[in-house]
Image (cartoon, rainbow, N blue to C red; front, side, top):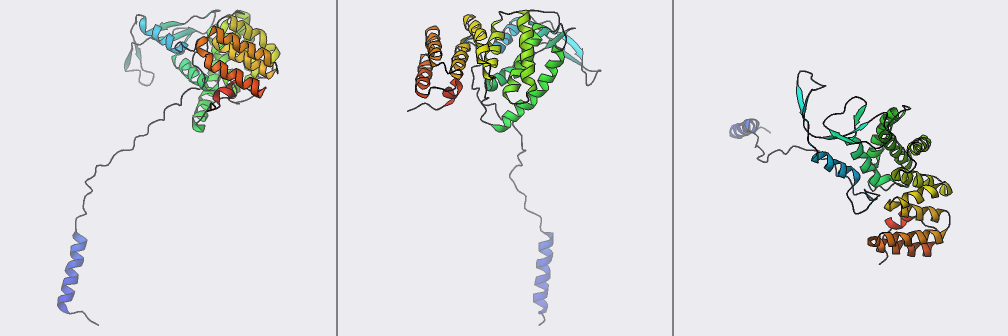
Length: 304
């Protein structure tokens, strides 16, 4: 069958028209995709174990740094030595050697045998909120993976500084805490040995340091050395570390000494009456369950 001339002409015109038609523009603007890093989930443990009602020690140090006069300094950029940068914000600076007491100062830049620990302390505080005790408390798997990766890097850095025989108290306490939390995150048995070594070095310098006794006490307890932990947790409680009472109660539960655990919590309630509701719940659960972990009780939903 052949098409009539008029039909052929119309078909040709329609094809040409279709080929030359200008595409219709999408008037909707193209929105660029911006990746936003998710917020860190809330901490499980109080960020100030000395006093639950006080700001975290790191934030207190930042406030002190901000209140101090700033000595501005111009430095060459490492990436481009021809350009300069003005440093005008105080950082937290500690000595790396030859200091047997806590010695944080506030300056815009670390000097010789010093290190800026502002970012280090910020990160350690974040990890504490999740992994101060065992087992650690993470709700997001990817968040935990990120913490693990960064903590491995930080422990390597701190271990290098702490390797010096005359490493400062400030370096050792940070290396110690980082090792305890690396152990809690199951990053390797080597961190158990490291934390023990650091604790012994710290307490040799200052056997009465409240923070060292607290961390060493609960570290021993959660690692299976419940009897060895008692004197350190006792010293921490006497030094006024609030969370030491909960760690001591937890230690007695592990030793199946329910009466001692309950008495410790009753003492805690007297010392910190604002914690009465939590204390009563812990005592009730211990009496009912017998052998329970304090941190499990705190993380379990309340009975209606």
